[in-house]
Image (cartoon, rainbow, N blue to C red; front, side, top):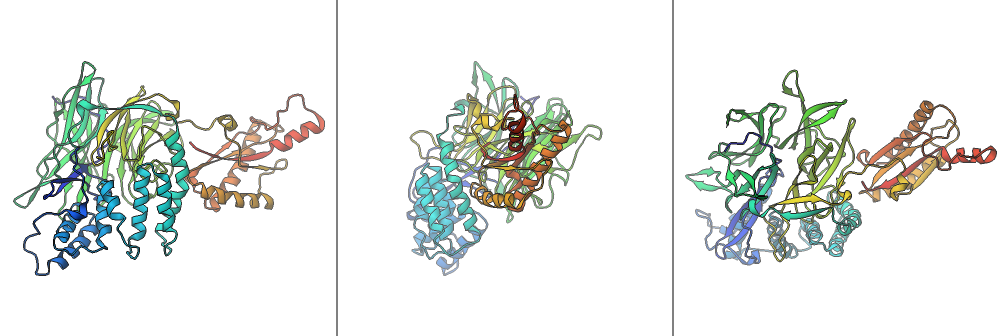
Length: 612
């Protein structure tokens, strides 16, 4: 049955690789074509040490010096992020007795990318200190320990990086990881924000992703058919492993899935569908396999014509510019100048972003019936890392997304940001059990409820399998899972100002003494990089409300601008002007010197370090 109301969240393509024939070891792979993970694979894996296993066959038609050929091939595949071939050819190298210590990193890194953390750890520990990749190996070992919840061991690996020859690329990552560990440890101890359970009826033996409730009884999601990414047939790559599927709710349980036909061919597949009934359009990601350039991800649309979707059409160059990768479309509405406006969120690594993949959005013009040029969601959302799988709740006006860079428990964590007329507020981690040390993504909330879906590769109890994703359902039970913006009296939330600056009557400029205090504070703010800075401007009760509001704005703005000069990131700072509404000393029943003293302490700027 073709659904009339399709609305599926983002699809993160995944694959696994059946590699080592001799021991029938099934390896989960993530093809990192432009950093978009493709993961799938068997959910029951036979574990073994990779460096001691290999195929009995070596590649056909090889030069006489097979070992030299294999070593060059491994380096080439490593640069291409072809983790399947790196693991396979390392196996051949073992057979030829040509495996030397420098190849431990290539093998360990490939298992790490494939989310086979046990095998990755075993190989990365063998990387010699003289290897140029030794620092990277330590960083990945630290991330593995963080995934397992072993924070002391993670810190030990990170500190070892500091003993190496200075690496301008690694040291900032090391410092950031160490500074973020206290927050991660605290996050892991906080009370559960939700009840989480696996959607057993709709999960398959391999990866299941991107579930989205279409209506009260229909669900659309994507699953992987088998453990092979592609099959070779007469030199052509055949895509037959990924399916869009529909499930129906019967007696409070999801019935077996049924494939949704019409969006797959031998050479490409359409995934990640998101339907908008108002414009009768299904938004999709098209994945095309390239011979040497890897996979290509593009945004397409398909009109619903009666009970059948028309042939998908590629969106304009605004949505698919140049060689960029564009995926994870999600349609919703937000308020803009008090008017509900249709918005399309998606993921892209196009130019003009903050790092790897960013969240972008486009507004719909009802008059022209066209989508406007996409806009970056900004620094509160996007980072130097990767932000993916956006989903916007129009009821709460909250954007949910996953990030591997915002401080979290490990892997991809789910974050939320509140939309306001001026843009987004800083991101807040959704906490446990929504997040784990593994990859948690495709979070989508059913509007008007506390329920929804997400995908995660977290292992089952008693299992070491981390290769494949399952779909989980959740029900939020704790308000810590909601966005809580700073109250008018921030102290009521348990926060106290880390610095208070006092001003003379009608003054807003910073004095030399105040600048010295801000210089000292800025160092603490840089160290506590996971904290958000709140700058609040105050006045006394003299003068009109409009005058005091302007004055408190100027005081807060001057502090804000100076912290920017001291390299405190803009996306970490909030500012508020509250004029005389929050007196440090109440004025009631005061007069004379007591009143003057109260006014002196109320002419101030307070600076808080808070966790949103």
